[in-house]
Image 1 (tube, rainbow, N blue to C red):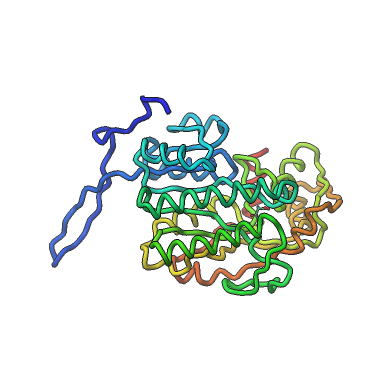
Image 2 (image 1 turned 90 degrees about the vertical axis):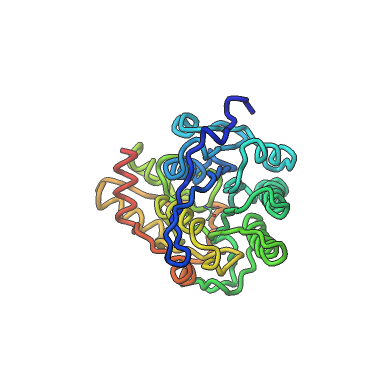
Length: 342
Ligand code: AKB
């Protein structure tokens, strides 16, 4: 940690809050809140950090990861190299920057986790326990922790998968996410830890590449369409999965974190839906814009993972509790992806 990164109170801008007390209107000037993003250089972390910096001011949003990120991220505000599996180092960073809120985005995703089960379990669980325990000890006030559609398994109803249903995940990643959900709910119930979570579907984005997921084909396909005019998909043509464009995912994340505490009624993790489609439907969508695009299918070990997951998600509780509404369908996603990558 470099000395010049310290935030002194006089440097910080106050946040205003208007309140009414017995009909008298008051403007409160609140102390600024500093935010730490763990895993800030990954696919979600990068865009989330930039969005939080835009909203709260760059100096209040500290990015951290085990490696440096892209120029946009590194040049837009403070950054720390941080291994969040180490409790002491994490605690030190939190004290140093006077952190209130933590977004824990570091995780090993489904395909890589099948290759390195113990490393995945240790990373996914130890980082979560570290932030939950820091909140239990009142060293931070609020946590965002992402879960995934991977919490569901082969015995789960495939279409319109409800919030509460049979889960029984069959992947290492899914098992870690389901355990994480149980621990989040436990820390809320026992220690009143304000932890909020979303079960992300596959996320499609153009700013940062994903790494090690089963839904990554839905990003690779656009890159290959533009570079080679063709793509060999590692999932079969009829494999329908829940997906979401990154802008929707970031909006949902900010929205659940800003919602009043009383509105967050699910303390494990909320189902969240955007769109659902097969690789074949995605290819047809790309062909509508690039008629010469060609796709082939060569399913590999990721097919089994995808087959164990739902095809579509029912996100009624997220809509009812904190007003979630998705904005991107497949056509709009293709337009954004080809427009920005082209
Ligand atoms: C993955 O494919 O592992 C992730 C996920 C669905 O959580 N994108």
